[in-house]
Image (cartoon, rainbow, N blue to C red; front, side, top):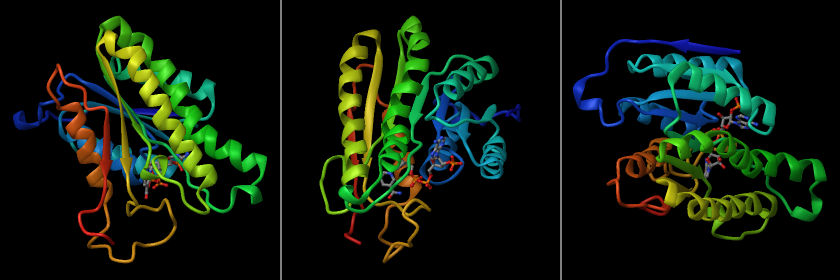
Length: 249
Ligand SMILES: NC(=O)c1ccc[n+]([C@@H]2O[C@H](COP(=O)([O-])OP(=O)(O)OC[C@H]3O[C@@H](n4cnc5c(N)ncnc54)[C@H](OP(=O)(O)O)[C@@H]3O)[C@@H](O)[C@H]2O)c1
């Protein structure tokens, strides 16, 4: 099910991304919601997806209040049919996607040797295969227009190894590898493929509150990194950003 809202004018100082269209996956809560809000505050029209109908509607309503055009659709990014419809409907509603943020992801922790094949598939389909599926659906029109930004949300877990991280770390290392290869495939088309590696961020993701919330990264810190990428100069290519808390939690 999809919904579109057309809202009031955006104020002049918020026009940096005016005319742009962003698709943010997994924007019903957490980091994705904050990224969608940030891109809307910069003037982009925003398309969002997730699986939780009520949370997605709440996120879309908040976006509508920023004054940009908003498209939201229930879509599971692990399913190619859902992804194909999502991209086609978002582009029909808002125009060609100029910014794609592959954010949707899940965590699952514990020794890899104790995990099931179903758990491996669930994590890798959500965190890694989805980046392939959604990017593949969006890239052809970016190539035709000779421009675009694709930003993949990996993790510092994609740079490190730790006990109980096997399946999750593997998926996030995969996102970094895929991002680097896609970047080389697409840079001569004027398309930047970047990856952001946040450290532990206070969302519902881990299911536990940070030890010291005043020191923890928040979703808006990751949104700021996305803003840095999409507002860089036209000749530069910020390929990878690591986001750590200033003071160790
Ligand atoms: N929080 C951290 O400490 C942290 C650190 C580094 C990196 N990250 C990465 O940042 C991203 C966002 O994490 P978060 O902390 O914001 O987690 P979160 O609060 O759990 O949000 C995850 C989002 O992804 C969506 N999602 C999950 N599976 C999906 C699917 N199959 N299809 C469509 N949407 C799906 C969820 O929506 P529905 O449930 O409605 O589908 C939700 O909107 C993830 O890729 C995560 O790995 C998080």
